[in-house]
Length: 204
Figure (cartoon, one colour):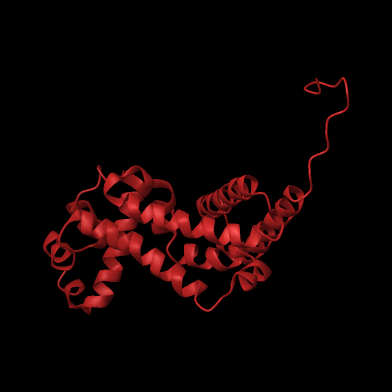
């Protein structure tokens, strides 16, 4: 405990954020106490409170750090750059670096009233990028909005599921596969659906 207390402040905060993210992911926000975080980090509760004023502050900082990291990853990239590289290949390394926090941001924060703003911020960015990329495939506004929301959710949940079950050594491979899959979806959605044959089910 004494050795742990000698960490520089920035390193201590980073350690606590990582430990807390794992605790929150396992037990949920309501089921996790600052004592639980302290035990997960191997420090006293006093050290946790020296770095974060409340459980809410700690949880918010966990989510905010993911958003900051994503902003850094996308910095300087145009929508065309993202489309060419594939969004999954950009997002997955960030998610792998903070796997628990990333899953909290996508899956859990939305259900916590105090953190809905951060969940909405993330979802908005996902939709904006998806819509900008898909606009070259789909022109009709309603279909474009649906496609952006659907493909964005597919992408992020796919990354979360890979974090759940996947082998980190295959992240590069999976990032490419996911990006290729989204391009295939975009191509399919850009092609008007054929009308069903006369007399078939649903054809009138």
